[in-house]
Length: 458
Ligand SMILES: *Cc1c(COP(=O)(O)O)cnc(C)c1O
Image (tube, rainbow, N blue to C red; front, side):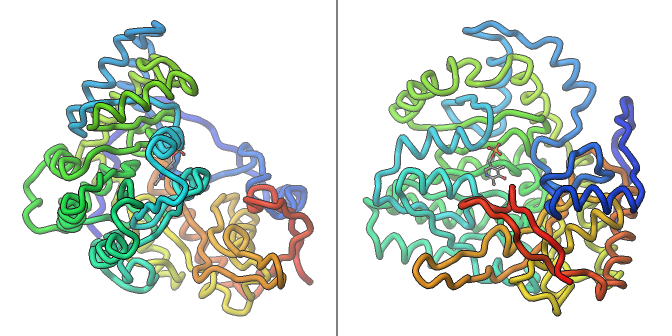
């Protein structure tokens, strides 16, 4: 494949520990076979998440020294605001310390108890913040977006017919906003096309409903538009982003993704009255409007990260690196979700180990095997995370998909690291008959995957 070499060189390094198989066996037993309980200094390649794990550049680090820590009117805020406005184009820019606070501020200001919020697929904090306001989160991704084998260039698209039908069915009054997540994280990091965004925007305008983007991976989405959508081949990422955001009325953003920093977020809003109400709430729960939960130096790093993420050589390397890992795995016979998305490769654990039933957590079993074999940390997105129990009958319903996500941190690992991950996983695939199912010995009443304790069966 056409895979460019790294468009950066290494100035600072962080040593990572190398453990033996025997040590890892003991460590994973002590962690009760839950990868969240393994200390990070016992991990060789950490693919748990791409969130807040980016490597900052020398340009960002030098900006850290220039951070203005003034409580009010910090010049770092004005730089942050100006940079964001130049890309996103929105009027009011409200800093928050993470994306979920932007969600909380927005939803608690516009949702009522019977509100319904459509999205392609809601990310879990988004869904959580909507449900926390007693409103309902509805996923309306196109059917192709739910099929792990279907090739489609824009599998993150929202289904326009389903959207319009929902509005007609429940009435405009119950839908205070429509969300679109770019790229669609929970659907495998799949992009949304400009055409789809334009159509969704037309529907929203027709009914007078604001369209808000969950913009965490907007630059990766814009790069896919440039590569896959007719008419955008010769546009810059900045031009594509400006057009994309012009179809909406605001966005929430976790800077821990495409702003290439370790902490931060923001909310953009066009509406003056809403921005005023949210700012009043911000002062109460996050901070003064010119820092909103971040240090001045963090604002500076976000502004510089947003400038850098628009660089096409960076994005080409980024998207190609993820695809490279996916293709290596496919060559080795490992079943993965296709096409490969922007930030992660998803391994199909159900097909990897068809003999382990979902009641024995095949996804978790694969994360355990990855750790034991190679010191690699991945995350299960399957029956431990999502199975639901009927409170009356005790019957358990398992999720349709049983996946293991290999999320790639930005600018952190080299191609040789990707080779190592692929070789390890292919090796596990060849010896998959030796993987054991697991059973629970402890589970918390909610979000059990974080703290569950398990043991191997047999
Ligand atoms: C990470 C993420 C969020 C939440 O952002 P945090 O900074 O983790 O609070 C919201 N939506 C999507 C799509 C995300 O990936």
